Length: 461
Image 1: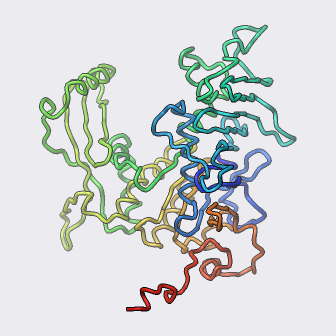
Image 2: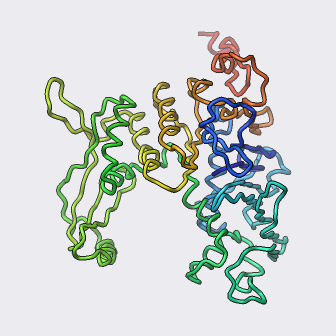
Image 3: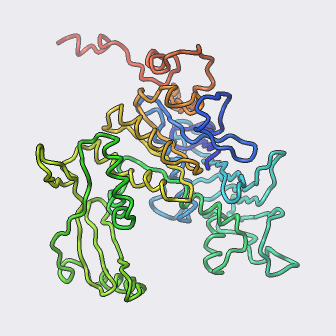
C-alpha cells in the first residue's frame, strides 16, 4: 500500500509537497481504512484543482519514479526528468522523490532518491518501525561520479557467513539506482538473496499502476474475456450498474491470413512460445494489439486466428443484438471500458494494486464518476488496494461518498509552483456543503479569471 509520497523540484513542484494516505481524525466511513501495524491507511484519494495546477504532474512524478526504478538508467531515452525551471537555483538542483510503502509481510519502508540528468546523487532505504527507522542501505554519488554504498544490518540469505553481502556491489553505476541494479543481479544469480528488496522492486513494478488518459491500452478488455470465464459475467453486471447503454461486450472472429499479414520474425517468435504449450492442452498464446481492439490467438498446433472487440446493443422489442465497433461509442464510454479490467481484476486477485488515475472524469457524466469510485470501494473488499484519482468533477466532493482526509487540492502559486493540501487541514461546520464551498472558493484550487470587460478587443466589438 502507498502510505506517503513526496516530490521536490520536478516539473511544477519547486518545494517539497507531500501526498499522504494516512487517515486523519475523521471516523466517518471506517470501511475506507486499512489497519497496517499501528497505522490507519486510506483506500482512496481524490485530487482537485484547476487546469495547469499540477494534478497531472503529480501522477507524472510517480510514473517517472516507477519507470526509473524498473527500466534502469538515465540513458533510457524516454525517461523525462525535468526540474522546476522557473527558478535558476532549482533548475540546477536534483529532483527528489520519496515513497513510504507497505509491502511484504506488513513491513513498511521509506525509499528515497535524488537525481538529475547526470547522475543519481543520493539513494536510501529505511525500514519503518513504530519506534523509529532502521537503515537498510544508503548510497551517495560524488560530482566525479564515484558511488559509495553503505549497508545496514540487512537480512541476507548468505552463502558466505563471514561476509554475507559479498555478492553486492560496493560501488555502483552513477546513472542507475541501486534497487534496479540489485534486481538485475538477482536475475543473473537466479535466486533471491535479499527477499525484501525483491518485494520493494515488485511493488513499483507490479503494484503501482499510474494511468494517463491516452496511455490505457484497450487490449485489457479482450484479454480479460479470453482468460477469465467469470470476467464476462462481471463485466455485464458492471455495464448495467453504470447504465452506459451497452448490453454486453463480445469478441468476433474476423478473416485473417497469417502467412501474408504477419512478419516472418514475429511468426518465428510465436512458434517459440507455442512450443511451451502441452500438446493435449487447450491453452493459447494471446496478443493484444496496442491502440485498437484486435487480438491475435495462436494454439498448440501453431494455427492463428484474429478477433475484434465489439459492443452489443439489443434491438428494441427483439431478442437480437447489433454489434458496434468500439470507435462508434462515445469517448467517455471507451474511457470507462478501458480501465474496467483493472478494477474488475480485483475481484479474483489476491495481490494488491495502487491505481493512480489521471482525469478519471474525462468525458464521463458526474453520476458515473461517483459510481466508479463506489465500485472500487465495494469490489476491492478487504484487499489492500488503493485508488487515487485526479478530477474536475465536483460531484465527488460529497462526504457521503468520501472522507475529508481523502479529498486533496492542488493549486498553482504566482511563482508558477504547485502546492498540495488536504481538506482535513480546514476547520469546517459539521454539515457544510463541501461542493458548494469549493465552488465559492472556500478551499482555493479553483480557476480565477477577471471579468470579460478586461479584454479591450472584446469591448470594441
